Length: 461
Image (cartoon, rainbow, N blue to C red; front, side, top):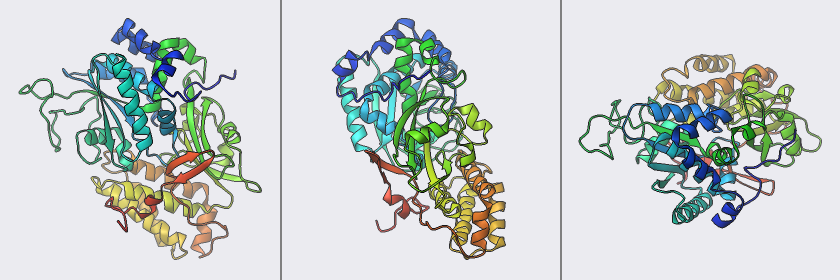
């Protein structure tokens, strides 16, 4: 059954246009149902988080609502920074109202009267649309007692990690905490694990408070108003039993029509690549990467359905629905060095095995890339891959382990060629596919990333 996309159906120029198209009905129904039944409706829809983890949204809402603590917060994660993704920015540009409405519903469901929308300071066009939409929705009485603050944060990759996101909202650097937000939320005063504490906003002088905090991705929240307005059964008509709905996908790299496309979940990856125009003339696609958080997807697995469980069964992951494609002119040693270098630079340094491990792996891959390596360098890569995840506060070390090991295992011939000092493939110097903009099939990548250093400063600035 073919069902047309709904999150990206059309650009919505104003609040009046949004309301005329049915906007606001989800929030109205949520308020009539009440918090508990609203969370139940989301659970019945089987909506899963679109930020990369695929965690059941209703389960997350219920756990935050039931967590101990007298004060709760709701946070929208719009700090999109995964390489090869541009879906949240596309949604914010086209229709900021649905994401804000979803945030208001989520806040009501978990019992929060204060919410934060965190995005990057460099997302100026998106922030302008969001701030304008917030002003209009507030003036129209749609937010009804909910305070929503927009936080403009740094460009660092870890800003998108939910525990680091909370640190940024509190005015700190994006350094991941130990405990998840439902256990140690915004402005929490307990438990103490070494970072700066804050007095409880609602009750100065009270005892330690964990302030359970809900964190949902922008695309996840954009689904919520539609589910409440039309019902969970409607949502489950799309996709599969375990992965219902649609997925807003980004496709960049060696394809004819890179862009952002909304697909019904369960569609094969190959169908998405056809929508994106397939390979360039005379080329053959070789590999895809779902961001930098999962194992490489070889061309032999391109028929894998776009669901969390099918991608996992194929030995990889769906991630945030962003795919970087490489064709048969690409050297996978080159790709491995570039992507490992991105993770090495973006590692925060709180966990030495991660920072040192990603750095050592990248240095060895760079020597291999240049044709100056020997077996000892591959031994270094293998040794560091075994320890890079030790004591990690976040998933970055695991990303390095999965990504690099899978490239080594899947494309051994490329590495053998480089040990011999020569590369048989014509194309080199790949950029990190960190997307700055996509307009009419033309992708602009973040040129500053190549100048970023491991201490998060930039060469030449």
